Image: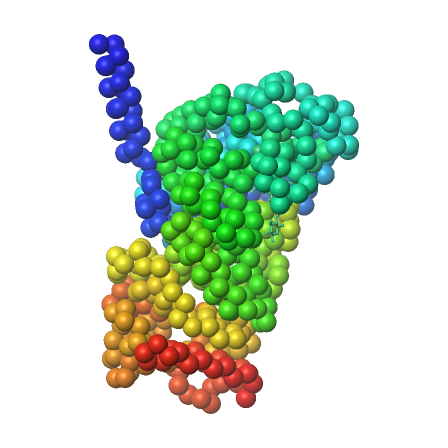
Length: 547
Ligand code: ABC
Ligand code: CA
């Protein structure tokens, strides 16, 4: 009787949890804004004071969960329907002035996984944020770290610790307060040695990241039960998982199942085959291999479009569901911001557009919309309140248009969510991509140039036809396909071009439409590129520089 009753309760709990849990296919319809909690928004009481924040100091700047809640309008105004927040658990405290690695302001230095990080607010602040997100119909993804606990080497912070955990006190750690809870100390020195990557330690001499012994079954069970409780207790909709390649692959399916939500893992490596294999263990991983190729393609006007096309091919070969098992990004809290490589707005807009037109879950790191340009960590972690949340910015508008266009494509055709993006053609400075009903032409010709796109849509076999009308949604320009199925369009200032059928373009995508002004050859001044997708399978491409 007792037994049956508890079974019934368990079944009920599972049912209730499943009512909240969001799956990979639920997330596929979303786009994500990455919030670094300490740097996004001050609590409402301090908001107006505009506190300074020197990212290079690596000290807490004061952002909180209540701050995020107070600025959800800003995120939603750009068209995002999901956020990812920093890890939420209680952190290692280091003496001030801090060691070279800084402090735990970022949240990746867990010390007690059963307590919240009070620098970010209280339990009720966190619940209030989650409720506010859900009541807007948005999702919230939490970041979790299970590879390590952070430690501080008290006796010799400048020398490498010796085995095991010399000079480190585990008082107050919860759980894992015994040396035996960790792999014995060894620094990761060879990323080509997978056993070392999994069982040695990240971090520095001053702040060693004590590598949890995830070979131990009791530890595995503890983590599975911890994640199950964390997700159901707070009703998070998804997980961003830190340091995935640092734990053996067989750990992950059980962890993902226990969470019952969508899992997106961080495997920091440029090799598509290496990274892609992790999609057999988790729903998705960040597209680090693709990111490297976006950088090389759009960082300068000399980048290679064929290498970018090759990386799309690699993704479809090595990732479980091709691009659908990726999170697509241009920036994050670990990498230099894209505008630190180039200030060419044409290049920046193309690189951002690329992350929105493909199969992966688009993810934008806070500050991209403000064209922040900080370089390597920690300078890429500028506070967003320093921008005063200005919405009248070119990239804020660009990102909004891309979000609206993606939503319109999804609403306009159910096949958008199942059609893999295809490369139609590449030329020296351009790549044409189709994912019906979206058609895009990206270029690295740069802001000083205009580009002429010419596409024979009749050959695409995707629902476009002669005499139909499309809209280039970033400039809100109407483009008529002629009687032979040809489309001609001129992009200004090296901008990307993204087309949708007119019938799918609502007032959220474009409030006013202008007629296509292309086709006047006299307009071309500096350089002109032509993409022409010819009938049948023959694709003619040409590129004219200068005139
Ligand atoms: C702090 C300071 C830094 C200082 C450092 C010593 O200490 O901020 O200025 O240099 C957190 C904090 C960091 C902090 C670290 C260490 O902890 O955010 O600010 O650095 O205390 C995740 C998170 C990250 C987080 C942690 C730790 C892990 O996203 O924010 O960091 O919880 C490795 C891991 C990866 C990890 C990353 C930081 O380190 O694999 O999970 N990120 C190669 C290796 C990678 C390695 C990377 C490090 O170097 O293969 O495994 O990442 O830079 C490509 C290659 C790659 C190669 C890259 C550099 O080039 O294909 O393989 O990556 O082309
Ligand atoms: Ca490990």
